[in-house]
Image (cartoon, rainbow, N blue to C red):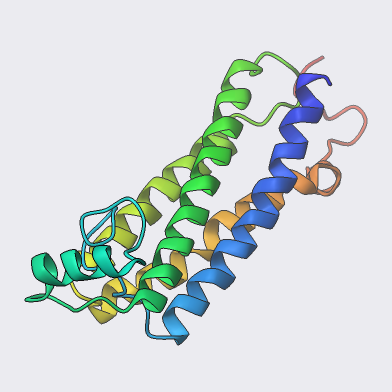
Amino acid sequence: MNKSKLFYRLAWAATGLTLVVIVAGAWVRLTHAGLGCPDWPGCYGMVTWPSSTEHVDRANAEWGHVRLVESGKAFREMFHRYLAGFLGLVILALAFLGWRNRSRPGQPVVLPMLILGLVIFQAALGMWTVTLLLKPAIVTATCSAAWLPLGYCCGFRFPAARERTRPRCRRGLSARR
């Protein structure tokens, strides 16, 4: 598979995965699981959510002063974080491929870097959402900013439309002679 095909297949994957992450984020928000894990990036000090009785008891002993474990909410929160983390890796791969193939004509370079920056900012908003206990301004920013990477990922999918919208010079009026 050539590098250009790999880039655009990853762009398709990133676009679809971004939509899945947005839907999962809405699921977390609508089921009031946004604080299912009181810390970030882990959950009750673990990589996964506490599900066994032993892990729940240990988490309640350590974190009970903040919030008792609700395994269902913790699962939803961590599921969303894992999806978002995987999306971040896919977009990191897009940015790497864009930079590596920057000498190829038509290879997007700035857009993947911009999307990577947005995803890093989105991760910071996700962290602040948890650490600042769902402050409305942060939650609103998180939900609103989630749509930006989706729009930019869609920009990879329509290069022909971008070509048609470029202004064209009339014959004889070009800048170069």
